[in-house]
Length: 138
Image (cartoon, rainbow, N blue to C red; front, top):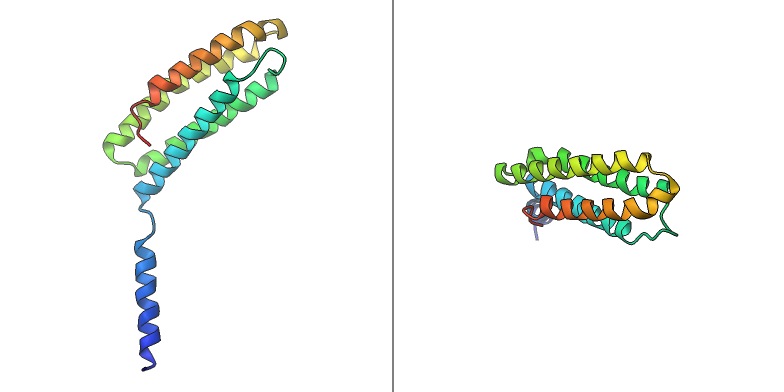
């Protein structure tokens, strides 16, 4: 075996490994899908709240996590195909409007209002999420 054989094998392995990496678009899709899944998780947590477990700080934490996920999606949009980019932009905008409405209401709720209005607001947010992100495949 010549000295160049191990080097050639190493070079071939490096080329194969480089080919296995994700493209920018694949990474962007992964970011969008991961953020979408986390948004669903946050909504599920909000839907699971009861009057005895709901706190303003807890709800605000869920809403902040959703806002962070939307920012991740927005940051990844530039690497998506034009059709997928448009789907994500439209979904983000529609859902952000719902989210801002709920976030604005949460800050002004009293402890007694939380029990009734939070349930309605979270259900509305969940419906808005479904409508906004149904077209974004993951």
